[in-house]
Image (cartoon, rainbow over all chains, first blue to last red; front, side):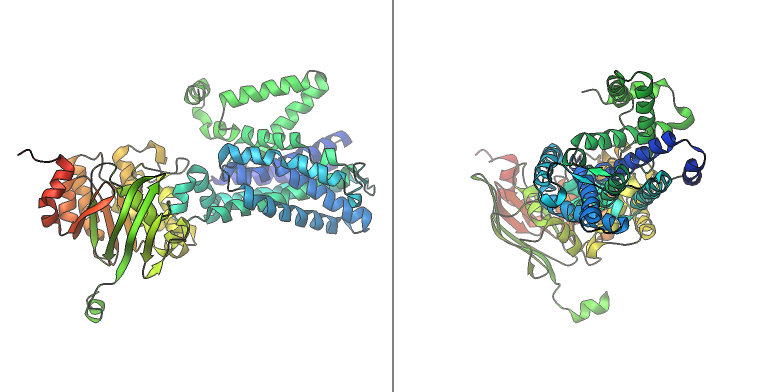
Length: 316
Length: 254
Protein backbone atom coordinates (compact mmCIF):
# COMPACT_ATOMS: atom_id res chain seq x y z
CA UNK A 1 0.00 0.00 0.00
CA UNK A 2 1.26 3.40 -0.88
CA UNK A 3 1.81 5.72 2.00
CA UNK A 4 -0.46 8.73 2.25
CA UNK A 5 2.40 11.22 2.34
CA UNK A 6 3.63 10.05 -1.05
CA UNK A 7 0.30 11.06 -2.55
CA UNK A 8 0.27 14.39 -0.71
CA UNK A 9 3.77 15.20 -1.95
CA UNK A 10 2.75 14.19 -5.49
CA UNK A 11 -0.27 16.51 -5.44
CA UNK A 12 1.80 19.41 -4.07
CA UNK A 13 4.47 18.89 -6.75
CA UNK A 14 1.81 18.72 -9.48
CA UNK A 15 0.20 21.96 -8.30
CA UNK A 16 3.60 23.66 -8.01
CA UNK A 17 4.47 22.54 -11.55
CA UNK A 18 1.24 24.08 -12.83
CA UNK A 19 2.53 27.53 -11.79
CA UNK A 20 5.89 27.22 -13.56
CA UNK A 21 4.70 29.09 -16.71
CA UNK A 22 3.82 32.12 -14.54
CA UNK A 23 7.35 32.51 -13.23
CA UNK A 24 9.64 30.53 -15.55
CA UNK A 25 11.53 31.77 -18.58
CA UNK A 26 10.63 30.72 -22.13
CA UNK A 27 13.47 28.19 -22.23
CA UNK A 28 12.33 26.74 -18.94
CA UNK A 29 8.77 26.34 -20.18
CA UNK A 30 10.00 24.70 -23.37
CA UNK A 31 12.21 22.36 -21.40
CA UNK A 32 9.18 21.67 -19.21
CA UNK A 33 6.96 20.74 -22.16
CA UNK A 34 9.54 18.27 -23.44
CA UNK A 35 10.17 16.81 -20.00
CA UNK A 36 6.46 16.42 -19.26
CA UNK A 37 5.77 14.77 -22.62
CA UNK A 38 8.71 12.39 -22.17
CA UNK A 39 7.51 11.55 -18.66
CA UNK A 40 4.08 10.76 -20.10
CA UNK A 41 5.68 8.44 -22.66
CA UNK A 42 7.70 6.68 -19.94
CA UNK A 43 4.64 6.42 -17.71
CA UNK A 44 2.47 4.95 -20.45
CA UNK A 45 5.23 2.51 -21.41
CA UNK A 46 5.15 1.51 -17.74
CA UNK A 47 1.60 0.12 -18.08
CA UNK A 48 2.52 -2.91 -20.20
CA UNK A 49 6.30 -2.82 -19.68
CA UNK A 50 6.47 -2.18 -15.94
CA UNK A 51 3.32 -3.92 -14.74
CA UNK A 52 2.85 -6.57 -17.44
CA UNK A 53 6.57 -7.25 -17.92
CA UNK A 54 6.43 -7.01 -21.71
CA UNK A 55 9.29 -4.90 -23.09
CA UNK A 56 7.90 -3.11 -26.13
CA UNK A 57 9.95 -1.19 -28.65
CA UNK A 58 6.85 -0.42 -30.65
CA UNK A 59 5.24 2.20 -28.41
CA UNK A 60 6.84 5.00 -30.44
CA UNK A 61 4.57 3.86 -33.28
CA UNK A 62 1.58 5.07 -31.26
CA UNK A 63 3.38 8.35 -30.75
CA UNK A 64 3.78 8.61 -34.52
CA UNK A 65 0.14 7.73 -35.15
CA UNK A 66 -0.84 10.41 -32.64
CA UNK A 67 1.26 13.05 -34.38
CA UNK A 68 0.00 12.10 -37.83
CA UNK A 69 -3.61 11.75 -36.76
CA UNK A 70 -3.54 15.24 -35.32
CA UNK A 71 -1.56 16.69 -38.23
CA UNK A 72 -3.74 15.16 -40.94
CA UNK A 73 -6.97 16.22 -39.24
CA UNK A 74 -5.75 19.79 -38.73
CA UNK A 75 -4.03 20.42 -42.07
CA UNK A 76 -6.11 18.42 -44.55
CA UNK A 77 -9.51 18.84 -42.97
CA UNK A 78 -9.11 22.08 -40.99
CA UNK A 79 -10.42 20.38 -37.89
CA UNK A 80 -9.73 21.86 -34.45
CA UNK A 81 -6.81 20.58 -32.35
CA UNK A 82 -9.07 18.67 -29.95
CA UNK A 83 -10.64 16.71 -32.79
CA UNK A 84 -7.15 16.07 -34.18
CA UNK A 85 -6.11 14.52 -30.88
CA UNK A 86 -9.15 12.26 -30.95
CA UNK A 87 -8.30 11.15 -34.48
CA UNK A 88 -4.73 10.42 -33.39
CA UNK A 89 -5.91 8.44 -30.37
CA UNK A 90 -8.32 6.37 -32.45
CA UNK A 91 -5.59 5.59 -35.00
CA UNK A 92 -3.22 4.57 -32.21
CA UNK A 93 -5.81 2.39 -30.47
CA UNK A 94 -6.61 0.59 -33.72
CA UNK A 95 -2.87 0.19 -34.29
CA UNK A 96 -2.36 -1.18 -30.79
CA UNK A 97 -5.15 -3.72 -31.19
CA UNK A 98 -3.96 -4.85 -34.63
CA UNK A 99 -0.35 -5.11 -33.51
CA UNK A 100 -1.06 -6.47 -30.04
CA UNK A 101 -3.26 -9.41 -30.95
CA UNK A 102 -0.67 -11.26 -33.03
CA UNK A 103 2.55 -10.01 -31.41
CA UNK A 104 1.55 -10.34 -27.78
CA UNK A 105 1.39 -14.09 -28.29
CA UNK A 106 5.17 -13.98 -28.28
CA UNK A 107 7.00 -14.09 -25.00
CA UNK A 108 9.96 -12.23 -23.56
CA UNK A 109 12.73 -11.38 -26.00
CA UNK A 110 10.71 -12.58 -28.99
CA UNK A 111 8.05 -10.00 -28.27
CA UNK A 112 10.68 -7.27 -27.96
CA UNK A 113 12.28 -8.27 -31.26
CA UNK A 114 8.95 -8.36 -33.06
CA UNK A 115 8.12 -4.84 -31.90
CA UNK A 116 11.47 -3.55 -33.17
CA UNK A 117 10.36 -3.76 -36.76
CA UNK A 118 7.22 -1.69 -36.32
CA UNK A 119 8.79 1.76 -36.55
CA UNK A 120 10.46 1.02 -39.85
CA UNK A 121 7.26 -0.42 -41.28
CA UNK A 122 5.21 2.61 -40.27
CA UNK A 123 7.85 4.99 -41.56
CA UNK A 124 7.70 3.26 -44.93
CA UNK A 125 3.93 3.46 -45.02
CA UNK A 126 3.66 7.13 -44.07
CA UNK A 127 6.48 8.14 -46.44
CA UNK A 128 4.23 6.97 -49.26
CA UNK A 129 0.92 8.37 -48.09
CA UNK A 130 -0.03 11.52 -50.04
CA UNK A 131 -2.54 12.45 -47.34
CA UNK A 132 0.35 12.51 -44.83
CA UNK A 133 2.56 14.63 -47.10
CA UNK A 134 4.56 11.59 -48.18
CA UNK A 135 8.21 11.85 -47.18
CA UNK A 136 8.09 15.64 -46.86
CA UNK A 137 5.66 15.68 -43.97
CA UNK A 138 3.02 18.16 -42.87
CA UNK A 139 3.17 21.68 -41.50
CA UNK A 140 0.58 22.44 -38.84
CA UNK A 141 -0.96 25.86 -38.15
CA UNK A 142 1.26 27.96 -35.92
CA UNK A 143 0.19 28.71 -32.38
CA UNK A 144 2.58 30.61 -30.14
CA UNK A 145 1.14 29.67 -26.79
CA UNK A 146 3.71 27.66 -24.87
CA UNK A 147 1.81 28.09 -21.61
CA UNK A 148 -1.14 26.22 -23.09
CA UNK A 149 1.09 23.41 -24.35
CA UNK A 150 2.80 23.21 -20.99
CA UNK A 151 -0.47 22.93 -19.08
CA UNK A 152 -1.81 20.37 -21.57
CA UNK A 153 1.32 18.26 -21.15
CA UNK A 154 1.09 18.52 -17.37
CA UNK A 155 -2.58 17.57 -17.43
CA UNK A 156 -1.82 14.59 -19.65
CA UNK A 157 0.96 13.38 -17.36
CA UNK A 158 -1.37 13.76 -14.38
CA UNK A 159 -4.09 11.76 -16.12
CA UNK A 160 -1.63 9.04 -17.11
CA UNK A 161 -0.19 8.84 -13.60
CA UNK A 162 -3.67 8.68 -12.05
CA UNK A 163 -4.44 5.80 -14.42
CA UNK A 164 -1.28 4.01 -13.31
CA UNK A 165 -2.16 4.71 -9.68
CA UNK A 166 -5.54 3.09 -10.27
CA UNK A 167 -3.86 0.13 -12.00
CA UNK A 168 -1.50 -0.37 -9.07
CA UNK A 169 -4.45 -0.73 -6.71
CA UNK A 170 -6.89 -2.61 -8.87
CA UNK A 171 -7.83 -6.13 -9.88
CA UNK A 172 -6.64 -5.21 -13.37
CA UNK A 173 -3.18 -4.35 -12.06
CA UNK A 174 -3.00 -7.56 -10.04
CA UNK A 175 -3.70 -9.48 -13.23
CA UNK A 176 -0.94 -7.65 -15.10
CA UNK A 177 1.60 -8.22 -12.31
CA UNK A 178 0.65 -11.90 -12.17
CA UNK A 179 1.33 -12.12 -15.92
CA UNK A 180 4.69 -10.42 -15.43
CA UNK A 181 5.70 -12.81 -12.67
CA UNK A 182 4.52 -16.04 -14.28
CA UNK A 183 2.17 -16.01 -17.23
CA UNK A 184 1.34 -19.74 -17.10
CA UNK A 185 0.56 -19.67 -13.41
CA UNK A 186 -1.55 -16.53 -13.93
CA UNK A 187 -3.50 -18.36 -16.64
CA UNK A 188 -4.29 -21.38 -14.50
CA UNK A 189 -5.49 -18.97 -11.80
CA UNK A 190 -8.00 -17.43 -14.19
CA UNK A 191 -6.21 -14.40 -15.63
CA UNK A 192 -7.15 -13.85 -19.28
CA UNK A 193 -3.61 -13.00 -20.33
CA UNK A 194 -4.38 -12.05 -23.94
CA UNK A 195 -7.12 -9.64 -22.91
CA UNK A 196 -4.96 -8.06 -20.22
CA UNK A 197 -1.88 -7.65 -22.37
CA UNK A 198 -3.71 -6.24 -25.39
CA UNK A 199 -5.79 -3.87 -23.29
CA UNK A 200 -2.63 -2.67 -21.50
CA UNK A 201 -1.06 -1.92 -24.87
CA UNK A 202 -4.20 -0.08 -26.01
CA UNK A 203 -4.31 1.90 -22.77
CA UNK A 204 -0.65 2.87 -23.23
CA UNK A 205 -1.32 3.84 -26.84
CA UNK A 206 -3.95 6.41 -25.78
CA UNK A 207 -1.59 8.52 -23.65
CA UNK A 208 1.31 8.02 -26.05
CA UNK A 209 -0.80 9.25 -28.98
CA UNK A 210 -2.02 12.35 -27.11
CA UNK A 211 1.60 13.18 -26.23
CA UNK A 212 2.45 12.84 -29.92
CA UNK A 213 -0.47 15.07 -30.93
CA UNK A 214 0.51 17.78 -28.45
CA UNK A 215 4.10 17.65 -29.65
CA UNK A 216 3.03 17.85 -33.30
CA UNK A 217 0.94 20.97 -32.75
CA UNK A 218 3.63 22.54 -30.58
CA UNK A 219 6.48 21.92 -33.02
CA UNK A 220 4.15 22.64 -35.99
CA UNK A 221 5.89 20.02 -38.08
CA UNK A 222 5.57 16.29 -38.64
CA UNK A 223 7.66 14.03 -40.86
CA UNK A 224 8.08 10.23 -40.99
CA UNK A 225 11.56 10.15 -39.47
CA UNK A 226 10.69 12.18 -36.38
CA UNK A 227 7.25 10.62 -35.91
CA UNK A 228 8.39 7.00 -36.00
CA UNK A 229 11.66 7.36 -34.16
CA UNK A 230 12.77 4.18 -32.42
CA UNK A 231 15.29 6.08 -30.27
CA UNK A 232 12.29 7.79 -28.71
CA UNK A 233 11.10 4.36 -27.64
CA UNK A 234 14.51 3.55 -26.22
CA UNK A 235 14.26 6.71 -24.15
CA UNK A 236 10.86 5.63 -22.81
CA UNK A 237 12.35 2.34 -21.71
CA UNK A 238 15.43 3.91 -20.15
CA UNK A 239 13.45 6.53 -18.25
CA UNK A 240 10.92 4.03 -16.96
CA UNK A 241 13.53 1.50 -15.92
CA UNK A 242 15.75 4.19 -14.43
CA UNK A 243 12.88 5.42 -12.27
CA UNK A 244 11.39 2.07 -11.36
CA UNK A 245 9.23 -0.06 -13.64
CA UNK A 246 5.97 -1.25 -12.14
CA UNK A 247 5.84 1.65 -9.68
CA UNK A 248 3.49 4.64 -9.80
CA UNK A 249 5.89 7.57 -9.53
CA UNK A 250 9.18 5.93 -10.57
CA UNK A 251 8.86 6.57 -14.32
CA UNK A 252 7.90 10.22 -13.73
CA UNK A 253 10.81 10.88 -11.37
CA UNK A 254 13.14 8.90 -13.61
CA UNK A 255 12.31 10.94 -16.68
CA UNK A 256 12.47 14.27 -14.83
CA UNK A 257 15.91 13.38 -13.48
CA UNK A 258 17.23 12.12 -16.80
CA UNK A 259 15.79 15.05 -18.77
CA UNK A 260 17.48 17.43 -16.34
CA UNK A 261 20.78 15.56 -16.43
CA UNK A 262 20.74 15.57 -20.20
CA UNK A 263 19.86 19.26 -20.38
CA UNK A 264 22.65 20.20 -17.98
CA UNK A 265 25.18 18.02 -19.78
CA UNK A 266 24.15 19.42 -23.16
CA UNK A 267 24.50 22.99 -21.87
CA UNK A 268 27.91 22.43 -20.26
CA UNK A 269 29.69 20.14 -22.67
CA UNK A 270 27.63 19.93 -25.80
CA UNK A 271 29.74 17.41 -27.74
CA UNK A 272 30.33 14.78 -25.05
CA UNK A 273 26.82 15.05 -23.61
CA UNK A 274 25.50 11.91 -25.24
CA UNK A 275 28.54 9.95 -24.12
CA UNK A 276 28.22 11.06 -20.50
CA UNK A 277 24.49 10.48 -20.59
CA UNK A 278 25.14 6.90 -21.64
CA UNK A 279 27.65 6.58 -18.83
CA UNK A 280 25.06 7.77 -16.27
CA UNK A 281 22.62 5.14 -17.51
CA UNK A 282 25.13 2.31 -17.34
CA UNK A 283 26.00 3.27 -13.75
CA UNK A 284 22.33 3.50 -12.85
CA UNK A 285 21.52 0.06 -14.20
CA UNK A 286 24.50 -1.51 -12.45
CA UNK A 287 23.91 0.08 -9.07
CA UNK A 288 20.14 0.31 -8.92
CA UNK A 289 18.58 -2.16 -11.34
CA UNK A 290 15.18 -1.81 -9.70
CA UNK A 291 15.16 1.93 -10.27
CA UNK A 292 15.07 5.11 -8.24
CA UNK A 293 11.75 4.16 -6.65
CA UNK A 294 13.39 1.16 -5.00
CA UNK A 295 16.23 3.32 -3.69
CA UNK A 296 13.74 5.80 -2.21
CA UNK A 297 11.75 2.96 -0.65
CA UNK A 298 14.89 2.01 1.29
CA UNK A 299 14.52 5.38 3.04
CA UNK A 300 16.70 6.04 6.05
CA UNK A 301 18.24 2.58 6.10
CA UNK A 302 19.87 3.31 2.76
CA UNK A 303 23.64 2.97 2.62
CA UNK A 304 26.34 1.99 0.17
CA UNK A 305 25.53 -1.61 1.06
CA UNK A 306 22.31 -1.34 -0.94
CA UNK A 307 24.26 -0.65 -4.13
CA UNK A 308 26.82 -3.36 -3.45
CA UNK A 309 24.02 -5.87 -2.81
CA UNK A 310 22.42 -4.97 -6.14
CA UNK A 311 25.65 -5.74 -7.95
CA UNK A 312 25.98 -9.08 -6.19
CA UNK A 313 22.37 -10.13 -6.77
CA UNK A 314 22.27 -9.27 -10.43
CA UNK A 315 25.66 -10.49 -11.46
CA UNK A 316 25.41 -12.82 -14.39
CA UNK B 1 -26.13 -30.52 2.94
CA UNK B 2 -28.24 -33.34 4.32
CA UNK B 3 -31.39 -32.13 2.55
CA UNK B 4 -29.56 -31.90 -0.73
CA UNK B 5 -28.08 -35.33 -0.24
CA UNK B 6 -31.55 -36.78 0.32
CA UNK B 7 -32.91 -35.38 -2.96
CA UNK B 8 -29.92 -36.39 -5.07
CA UNK B 9 -29.25 -40.05 -4.49
CA UNK B 10 -26.19 -40.45 -6.72
CA UNK B 11 -23.43 -37.87 -6.25
CA UNK B 12 -22.83 -35.78 -9.37
CA UNK B 13 -19.73 -36.44 -11.41
CA UNK B 14 -17.54 -33.34 -11.47
CA UNK B 15 -14.71 -34.43 -13.72
CA UNK B 16 -14.42 -37.27 -16.13
CA UNK B 17 -11.47 -38.29 -18.28
CA UNK B 18 -12.29 -40.43 -21.32
CA UNK B 19 -9.34 -42.32 -22.76
CA UNK B 20 -6.99 -39.37 -22.26
CA UNK B 21 -3.77 -39.76 -24.19
CA UNK B 22 -0.79 -37.47 -24.45
CA UNK B 23 2.08 -38.20 -26.79
CA UNK B 24 5.23 -36.13 -26.96
CA UNK B 25 6.82 -36.85 -30.34
CA UNK B 26 6.16 -40.55 -30.16
CA UNK B 27 6.73 -40.88 -26.43
CA UNK B 28 3.45 -41.85 -24.81
CA UNK B 29 3.25 -39.99 -21.50
CA UNK B 30 -0.38 -40.76 -20.71
CA UNK B 31 -1.98 -43.74 -22.44
CA UNK B 32 -5.78 -43.90 -22.70
CA UNK B 33 -6.49 -43.14 -19.05
CA UNK B 34 -10.12 -42.90 -17.99
CA UNK B 35 -11.48 -42.01 -14.59
CA UNK B 36 -14.19 -39.96 -12.93
CA UNK B 37 -14.41 -38.03 -9.68
CA UNK B 38 -17.72 -37.15 -8.06
CA UNK B 39 -18.64 -34.36 -5.68
CA UNK B 40 -17.10 -34.78 -2.25
CA UNK B 41 -14.87 -37.52 -3.59
CA UNK B 42 -11.10 -37.64 -3.38
CA UNK B 43 -9.10 -39.60 -5.91
CA UNK B 44 -5.54 -40.37 -4.94
CA UNK B 45 -3.10 -40.80 -7.82
CA UNK B 46 0.16 -42.62 -7.30
CA UNK B 47 2.80 -44.01 -9.58
CA UNK B 48 6.56 -44.00 -10.05
CA UNK B 49 8.31 -40.90 -11.38
CA UNK B 50 7.57 -40.37 -15.04
CA UNK B 51 4.31 -42.33 -14.87
CA UNK B 52 2.38 -39.40 -16.35
CA UNK B 53 0.72 -38.02 -13.23
CA UNK B 54 1.59 -34.38 -13.75
CA UNK B 55 0.86 -34.63 -17.48
CA UNK B 56 -2.60 -35.85 -16.54
CA UNK B 57 -3.12 -32.84 -14.27
CA UNK B 58 -1.81 -30.51 -16.99
CA UNK B 59 -4.42 -31.84 -19.41
CA UNK B 60 -7.20 -31.30 -16.90
CA UNK B 61 -6.10 -27.81 -15.90
CA UNK B 62 -5.60 -26.81 -19.51
CA UNK B 63 -1.84 -26.30 -19.62
CA UNK B 64 -1.61 -29.17 -22.12
CA UNK B 65 -4.01 -30.26 -24.83
CA UNK B 66 -4.64 -33.99 -24.97
CA UNK B 67 -3.52 -35.80 -28.12
CA UNK B 68 -6.59 -38.00 -27.89
CA UNK B 69 -9.51 -38.46 -25.56
CA UNK B 70 -11.84 -36.08 -23.79
CA UNK B 71 -11.88 -34.02 -20.62
CA UNK B 72 -15.48 -33.72 -19.42
CA UNK B 73 -16.17 -31.17 -16.71
CA UNK B 74 -19.66 -31.18 -15.23
CA UNK B 75 -21.01 -32.96 -18.28
CA UNK B 76 -19.33 -30.72 -20.86
CA UNK B 77 -16.34 -31.39 -23.09
CA UNK B 78 -13.70 -28.80 -22.21
CA UNK B 79 -10.89 -29.96 -24.50
CA UNK B 80 -10.86 -26.62 -26.31
CA UNK B 81 -11.39 -24.43 -23.27
CA UNK B 82 -8.26 -22.40 -22.40
CA UNK B 83 -6.72 -22.67 -18.95
CA UNK B 84 -8.02 -19.35 -17.62
CA UNK B 85 -11.60 -20.26 -18.53
CA UNK B 86 -11.23 -23.62 -16.82
CA UNK B 87 -10.25 -21.65 -13.72
CA UNK B 88 -13.49 -19.70 -14.09
CA UNK B 89 -15.40 -22.99 -14.41
CA UNK B 90 -13.94 -24.04 -11.09
CA UNK B 91 -10.77 -25.99 -11.77
CA UNK B 92 -7.85 -25.08 -9.53
CA UNK B 93 -4.44 -26.67 -9.26
CA UNK B 94 -1.20 -26.45 -7.39
CA UNK B 95 2.15 -26.78 -9.10
CA UNK B 96 4.65 -29.45 -8.15
CA UNK B 97 7.36 -26.93 -8.95
CA UNK B 98 6.04 -24.04 -6.92
CA UNK B 99 5.23 -20.94 -8.88
CA UNK B 100 4.68 -18.05 -6.48
CA UNK B 101 4.43 -14.55 -7.97
CA UNK B 102 7.76 -13.22 -6.74
CA UNK B 103 7.06 -9.52 -6.95
CA UNK B 104 3.99 -9.85 -4.72
CA UNK B 105 3.42 -10.32 -1.02
CA UNK B 106 2.05 -13.60 0.30
CA UNK B 107 -1.37 -11.97 0.71
CA UNK B 108 -1.37 -10.63 -2.85
CA UNK B 109 -0.44 -14.03 -4.23
CA UNK B 110 -3.53 -15.56 -2.70
CA UNK B 111 -5.64 -12.50 -3.57
CA UNK B 112 -4.96 -13.25 -7.25
CA UNK B 113 -6.74 -16.57 -6.70
CA UNK B 114 -9.71 -14.81 -5.10
CA UNK B 115 -9.78 -12.10 -7.81
CA UNK B 116 -9.70 -14.38 -10.82
CA UNK B 117 -10.95 -17.78 -9.68
CA UNK B 118 -14.31 -19.44 -10.16
CA UNK B 119 -16.89 -17.37 -12.10
CA UNK B 120 -14.19 -14.82 -12.85
CA UNK B 121 -13.54 -14.24 -9.17
CA UNK B 122 -14.18 -11.45 -6.73
CA UNK B 123 -14.35 -7.96 -8.24
CA UNK B 124 -13.56 -6.01 -5.08
CA UNK B 125 -9.94 -5.81 -3.94
CA UNK B 126 -10.97 -5.42 -0.29
CA UNK B 127 -13.08 -8.58 -0.36
CA UNK B 128 -10.37 -10.49 -2.21
CA UNK B 129 -7.85 -9.51 0.43
CA UNK B 130 -10.27 -10.64 3.11
CA UNK B 131 -10.77 -14.01 1.40
CA UNK B 132 -7.02 -14.34 0.95
CA UNK B 133 -6.44 -13.59 4.62
CA UNK B 134 -8.91 -16.29 5.65
CA UNK B 135 -7.25 -18.95 3.52
CA UNK B 136 -3.82 -17.94 4.74
CA UNK B 137 -5.02 -18.30 8.33
CA UNK B 138 -6.41 -21.69 7.37
CA UNK B 139 -3.17 -22.90 5.83
CA UNK B 140 -1.11 -21.59 8.72
CA UNK B 141 0.50 -18.64 6.98
CA UNK B 142 -1.57 -16.08 8.88
CA UNK B 143 1.46 -14.40 10.38
CA UNK B 144 3.37 -14.14 7.12
CA UNK B 145 0.83 -12.37 4.95
CA UNK B 146 2.89 -9.22 4.41
CA UNK B 147 6.15 -10.96 3.59
CA UNK B 148 7.39 -11.11 0.03
CA UNK B 149 6.46 -14.45 -1.53
CA UNK B 150 10.08 -15.22 -2.39
CA UNK B 151 11.11 -14.96 1.26
CA UNK B 152 9.11 -18.10 2.13
CA UNK B 153 10.88 -21.41 2.66
CA UNK B 154 9.95 -24.68 0.91
CA UNK B 155 7.19 -25.92 3.24
CA UNK B 156 5.60 -22.48 3.42
CA UNK B 157 5.63 -22.24 -0.36
CA UNK B 158 3.65 -25.48 -0.46
CA UNK B 159 1.12 -23.93 1.90
CA UNK B 160 1.03 -20.83 -0.27
CA UNK B 161 0.30 -22.94 -3.38
CA UNK B 162 -2.50 -24.62 -1.47
CA UNK B 163 -3.97 -21.29 -0.26
CA UNK B 164 -3.82 -19.82 -3.77
CA UNK B 165 -5.79 -22.75 -5.18
CA UNK B 166 -8.35 -22.69 -2.37
CA UNK B 167 -8.96 -18.96 -2.74
CA UNK B 168 -10.24 -19.72 -6.24
CA UNK B 169 -13.26 -21.48 -4.67
CA UNK B 170 -12.76 -24.52 -6.91
CA UNK B 171 -15.23 -27.25 -7.78
CA UNK B 172 -12.29 -29.46 -8.66
CA UNK B 173 -9.01 -29.16 -6.80
CA UNK B 174 -5.90 -30.74 -8.29
CA UNK B 175 -3.12 -31.12 -5.74
CA UNK B 176 0.18 -32.03 -7.35
CA UNK B 177 2.53 -33.28 -4.63
CA UNK B 178 1.74 -30.64 -2.05
CA UNK B 179 3.46 -32.80 0.57
CA UNK B 180 6.70 -33.47 -1.24
CA UNK B 181 9.64 -32.27 0.80
CA UNK B 182 7.64 -31.89 4.00
CA UNK B 183 8.67 -33.65 7.22
CA UNK B 184 6.26 -36.17 8.81
CA UNK B 185 4.81 -33.61 11.22
CA UNK B 186 4.16 -31.18 8.39
CA UNK B 187 2.62 -33.96 6.30
CA UNK B 188 0.18 -34.70 9.11
CA UNK B 189 -0.71 -31.01 9.31
CA UNK B 190 -1.43 -30.81 5.57
CA UNK B 191 -3.45 -34.06 5.70
CA UNK B 192 -5.57 -32.51 8.46
CA UNK B 193 -6.07 -29.36 6.36
CA UNK B 194 -7.21 -31.38 3.37
CA UNK B 195 -9.57 -33.41 5.55
CA UNK B 196 -11.13 -30.16 6.79
CA UNK B 197 -12.02 -28.99 3.29
CA UNK B 198 -13.17 -32.41 2.13
CA UNK B 199 -16.90 -32.91 1.92
CA UNK B 200 -17.69 -29.32 1.03
CA UNK B 201 -18.93 -30.28 -2.40
CA UNK B 202 -15.48 -30.23 -3.96
CA UNK B 203 -13.94 -33.01 -6.00
CA UNK B 204 -10.25 -33.58 -5.36
CA UNK B 205 -7.44 -35.23 -7.21
CA UNK B 206 -4.40 -35.75 -5.02
CA UNK B 207 -1.05 -36.77 -6.49
CA UNK B 208 1.22 -37.93 -3.73
CA UNK B 209 4.15 -40.18 -2.98
CA UNK B 210 3.50 -40.28 0.76
CA UNK B 211 1.53 -43.52 1.00
CA UNK B 212 0.30 -42.83 4.51
CA UNK B 213 -1.26 -39.58 3.35
CA UNK B 214 -2.83 -41.20 0.29
CA UNK B 215 -4.31 -43.95 2.44
CA UNK B 216 -5.95 -41.57 4.88
CA UNK B 217 -7.19 -39.03 2.33
CA UNK B 218 -8.38 -40.98 -0.68
CA UNK B 219 -11.77 -42.52 -1.29
CA UNK B 220 -10.23 -44.29 -4.25
CA UNK B 221 -6.68 -44.68 -5.46
CA UNK B 222 -5.63 -44.79 -9.08
CA UNK B 223 -2.21 -46.11 -10.04
CA UNK B 224 -0.36 -44.99 -13.15
CA UNK B 225 2.56 -46.90 -14.58
CA UNK B 226 4.24 -46.00 -17.89
CA UNK B 227 1.25 -43.75 -18.60
CA UNK B 228 -1.27 -46.56 -18.18
CA UNK B 229 -3.82 -47.01 -15.46
CA UNK B 230 -3.02 -50.30 -13.71
CA UNK B 231 -5.39 -50.00 -10.77
CA UNK B 232 -8.35 -47.93 -9.58
CA UNK B 233 -10.05 -49.07 -6.39
CA UNK B 234 -10.36 -48.36 -2.67
CA UNK B 235 -7.03 -47.57 -0.99
CA UNK B 236 -6.66 -50.83 0.94
CA UNK B 237 -7.20 -53.03 -2.13
CA UNK B 238 -4.92 -50.96 -4.37
CA UNK B 239 -2.06 -50.68 -1.92
CA UNK B 240 -2.05 -54.48 -1.45
CA UNK B 241 -2.24 -55.20 -5.18
CA UNK B 242 0.87 -57.16 -6.26
CA UNK B 243 1.04 -55.30 -9.60
CA UNK B 244 1.16 -51.97 -7.76
CA UNK B 245 3.88 -53.19 -5.42
CA UNK B 246 5.77 -54.48 -8.44
CA UNK B 247 5.48 -51.14 -10.24
CA UNK B 248 6.92 -49.36 -7.26
CA UNK B 249 9.48 -51.86 -5.97
CA UNK B 250 10.15 -54.14 -8.91
CA UNK B 251 9.29 -57.83 -9.31
CA UNK B 252 9.72 -60.11 -6.29
CA UNK B 253 12.44 -62.66 -6.88
CA UNK B 254 11.21 -66.21 -6.75
